[in-house]
Image (cartoon, rainbow, N blue to C red; front, side, top):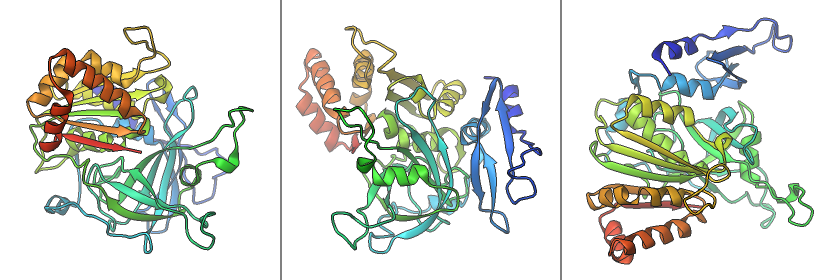
Length: 376
């Protein structure tokens, strides 16, 4: 991907023959990149004097944003805090944010739907990379009539400056939860995930109840020379997108990353890859500081001929990973809790093959604060 090719992306051509938006406050733009054209969605323009909707492709935007030189961010006062913000808004008094945009992130052959959701918090619910927001979906809790729904936690997928680099938005990466009856094979709408469907169905301008931010276990150590090994399944890539944008996309005067980040991402197939454009761009621009490996369970086989899961990739590189851990690397896991037993079994087997006790090693990693797990 050449720099000259990327320069062409930034040109958006107004479409004037769209009868559905002609003469209205809506503006449409079509954006193409090489041989690809992204179908954009309407987004809320929060900087306009009167709120208007604009059309923009977040996938295309991510390619633009990943170009070097790095992008200036504000307000830089965000760097002054010594401790992360925690629980600024509680369940009983949530903050009301506004949906800016909702984009489908995955291709047509991906099982299920994953959405990239940008929420405007007006700078009132600041957070650090690796933290989570709580979302309270509208309606009442069926188990407690008259009470609101329980809060659902979502890892934030942006840096503290947000996708617009102004400190006023946060991004969530949400997979729509649907339930299929095992006997009929048909979808049962009565059992669908209340919050994920609310978020994926929301439109620009819709209001959303936010709590938090919460969480300290996944905070990114500020050592600019550290080694970070990040292991994600599916939407568990969310906090790592935030880390990597901070390291490789944003111009933060007080944080110049010179270490190594290594991302392992496990998904079903190529169409299920999340933020792949951003990650492959970092690989091209920062080959000394970034590594990126994917495990595509429905397209690749492990060395035994079975499906390729993220733990198989870990085993493939286990010598390097263990040496990095011995030298102080941080290792992070984020995704469905079902990912951990397989990974732990693999790490234990590798440790034993190396003549080490995994239980002792794990205990030491936790004691040294090198071990970070957030599963759901």
